[in-house]
Image 1 (tube, helix red, strand yellow):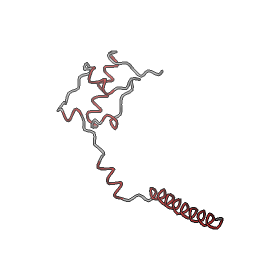
Image 2 (cartoon, helix red, strand yellow; image 1 turned 45 degrees about the vertical axis):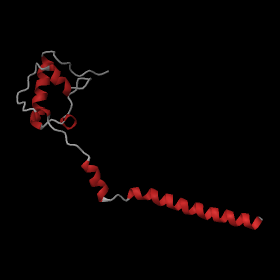
Image 3 (tube, one colour; image 1 turned 180 degrees about the vertical axis):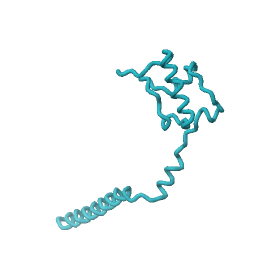
Length: 113
């Protein structure tokens, strides 16, 4: 009986070691990324489109506060173009309109809490 138990324990230990080796080898595979995985991720990235180019808006009015509030954070900072998706031309117009609205006190300046 004792010999059978020791043989069973040895068989179980070798099986456990094999499973651990498989798990360890599975963990290492995430370091060896394939090029195909990177390509797959890039396909799901959606490029932001400029709201003004899309709607053919060339003139931005500083009195249109509802539109300008979309491009200002709660703290009063202007959102950068890489976050809101506007093109360079329209980001400059947005910035200029926001600064004019601030000057006339239609929009708040930056506030620190």
